[in-house]
Image (cartoon, rainbow, N blue to C red; front, side):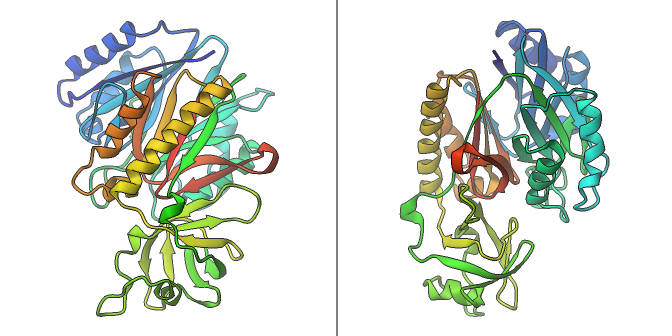
Length: 391
């Protein structure tokens, strides 16, 4: 049994007032059980003001999370906002972990933190909540794959830190009162918990009919599809070019990628087209994967978010998971809304209402398992996606 309590504050500078508001909210919720942990999403200013540190010093449990550029719960939404979710249980136990400085894609930089957090426990954790730093030389795919290997394929659900700046220079992971630019924070959950994971991206009517096969790639650089450059492949689908021959608005045309291993497809956003006609993507694109091209705009974001949340509620009800929900949505979906930045969060509040507590935050890359044949779990990183963990 697990309960979820969600509290928030918009008070950035008055540490005493904000802390009192949050503690009062916790006290007004369900009583804390034997074991508790806090998950936090906040605007970067809450770190700079000292509020996160001051709050951590007064809480009787640990907190872990990231900065974000906007977040929501069932009572409020906004940009300059801090949301704290408390997971509390008599049956489940929680252990937090913090890696050292991450300088590259080396799993051995992660392993000691897991070994320390898991201690001498014989059982595997049932779940990892993951809070990753946004680094230029480390991908979300690396984190998903590395933690799968280190933990023995424990389900990994979480987010990469972002903030409100164009270069994300204030994005941080958070553990208790400290914030980090280059260290991975996580929470291990031990006990009998079987959450449901749901992902939403792009609906079928927003996907081109043609399917291509990746014939050349290197890491996150997609070089050829069906034996031709990506630029030529996209032009062949009818995507417009500008006067310099560059594809127009490629950020609005992500790939839907099928690994061809029986698992659910994932989305890969394109950031740029190189002079050679290669696409720089938001994650690895392996040779042999099948690709289709979709399009995303405000209407598509709202439609898929609404439908995905409804599906999550139905799955949760069917599986007995209806005590709480964590939701991370890609910043690409945030920007696709144009000036109506609150539309997706308002959609979430409209669908979920008072059905259960929820915590919604925007993400640099989403970490969420997908299901394969016979219910097998594959940890994946996602772009332009909304990911949900309901328990």
